[in-house]
Length: 521
Picture (cartoon, helix red, strand yellow):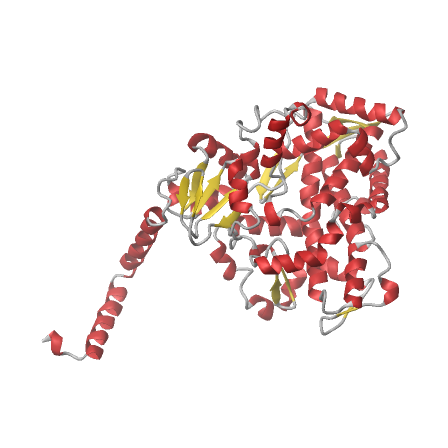
């Protein structure tokens, strides 16, 4: 009889049974859906052979909980020691610990693309998310934008602005001169990094060194953005109903003012140029004569309005302020702290600085070129500090291309998220013997073959086309301010027996670098 019923009647009956079933057993059906999803996560992703924490294969909540603890980098190191080169840390996430996988995953033509973790870290301006070089997943957009601004980040262009950095170094030394006991040197190094970025971007300090504190709440804002990105980035689908909700900028237009980094950038631009009500940047010839990035990009817009847009200027400058301070400050703290915890290394470096100084080889402040030429041990110290304590503490995620890929001898299906964590790779004992030790000498005394292997495995700035564009800014700052600091002051820990604290919220921030300072004769 059922076969004689019209299709519409059968459909209606089926829908009716389903609706009544949902009403009668809502929790049973929901539980069934959840169970099916969990089973799919565990067994149908094509990576069941990859070992890892039992719970991680079932749900992304394991990864969220791990990041929430603020120690995910140490968890990752432990897991790779336990399971080997590949570790499954999510239903479709695989962490990789093999330098041979760097060109496979991050090579220029690898086909591996950024994941949904990255767009979370863009600004909202004019009621729209505005992607930057770091956050965009569009490779063509990245290439186009990089062509516009890459020259400003070249070491040649930055050294042209070295006097701006010298002004910040001189101000930092002056401020420290009057604060010699129980100085939170870690905070002052971050103030320095902020003000250097201000000079390079806007030809003016941001005010951190002058006030000795946070300016316009920017440090707090950045910390909040990083924490949000670290946690929500593990379950990026949530971003679309949270801060990434497209209705928010419309319903709450004031939310754009919550980002004090963006607000400060707009204010700094308006002191030199003028952002009109229609959102266009109005530039006059007498406003763009400097060597700083705002001058260069505003001048390019003046010469060819179609070459670089107002949006581009705002996005790149605000990104510099956001990303160029914390990462460099983390590296600076690592250098100082690890030297203080290893007195023999500190003595060796001081001896080289003093010898170069006595020979009249160092300017005041120390120049970048002088450090590269006359202080080779500092170059090794700097690199080893970034190896022991890289700034970024989570996976640099990429999507495996559609055809899949073989990584560490294991076939990984297309769509799987893979990546390398710098903390894991830098603790690979096959590449870096005794990785837990701070040994700058490894960069000076290793064989050419070993040195090449270590260089290829150094991941502090990422790899491939997405290597950190601000790398040269960090290298220049570190090469100048640390030798000058140690040249002028005897630095010691206020409490030598106390360890600093670290917290991994995307960037592995440190606290507790409290020092005593004494003027050196």
